[in-house]
Length: 638
Image (cartoon, rainbow, N blue to C red; front, side, top):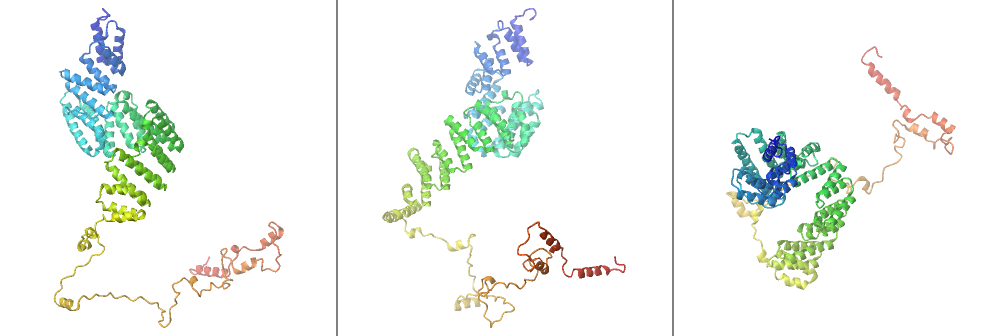
């Protein structure tokens, strides 16, 4: 037909549809662009927008849809898909609600499924609480996903078991729903179930069951699903489980996140999270340059995001460049004051790691939005106490109490801070400063005897008369007496001594008890053993328990008795040899010894036999005895 009439509108339109059905989107778009005069935007707007959508030219597809003069149902359906890909969830939600309200055909279930997917994405990435119903298995899946990803679910992870049961139900519902269609193969069913299995593994990961999650993740990867987005998310989750361990497995999984077409399957937040994990993996594998490049690229894409700067600071700390890391964080905090709180907390942590606790306190006190928080007050007081700066710690308490007194006077945190401030001041001997806090506490609860006792103790040092007046409010000793069952206390498990109950007395024992009363039995003491040479007539030495050197009659060791015996020195030396070698005993020795290297020194040294080479006395005799012992066995000898 086109050979006969090149500009036939119907033939051109049929050709475009055939190319789309074959997946030749570029060829179809080329035909549309070459015949723009014949194929106007009103005639072929849907086909052109669909080709641009499938070629991931999302912005062009949006312009094509908006330029169409008549918005048909097909264009509205495609418009919703385009808005979803652009992550404009509010407009997408309105578009699908309008479609569901104003259309009645067999695609209603698919529209509701898409609507549920939009709600799930909105709750995940924009933290908007969803309101929808479980209509089909796909809608149930999306509702479970949105509840799982919502902020409230993260605070109640103890209920994650319910999500696992829900996904088990979804697996059965999905299998039944898909098995009813005769055209769906088992592989298609497994591919559809892989998404639900991935969500179950994610729940296990949140529960801390990392081994079970890893096993399920690896099973999904072995199935080799065609969805590259699913594989990328699973690989990313495995990398987060591995962290700084099993880095070789993580490097393999990174390849799945780099597959072709992943950027069109995942949202911007998901792609950003994967890039963050790549930078962290580079840091764990000591690829410093790669880590810096990835984090710098992420920072250029999102200048206000915290993670790229924190990753760069962590890499600098691994390289022992703490000062440079703190400078980098300081610059970011000055450029982005809205996100400075977490950065300053990191800076304080680095200062503490360097031992600069006082500077860390200064950084923490510069975070105005956290100054009154109990956690911040506790941290500052602990750090100031470590530095023995009690005045600064009390100042922290005072500022926090003043804030609550001005903005939240009825808050229970207010009273707890006053209580802690009073206890801290009393602990460090600041009773005069603790009086105002104790009076405030007693005013709030006049029946608190413990606070009253503390207040009287504090006033006793400052104003004794006031202490006497306050002591009248103490309860009397009769009212404070404790009613304690002594027997029950002694017979309890915690008692170290248990009094034995007296048994019943019968017969002679009863008469003896009545006549003589209780007679205590005394244990016989065993006599100690006496030494063998003990003489009862001789008085023992009173200093016998002292060491010999500390006794009064100790005169020290007698010298000279063992002078001629072998003493310290080389092995085998004798007294005779030592006397011969002693130059002071020889009469012919010159008054001064010859210099080293002289002839006299050499000749004298050559005539002397070293002690180690001398034969001890009696050596030949012992040798003969040994030979006789050896010859004892036979006549021949050696």
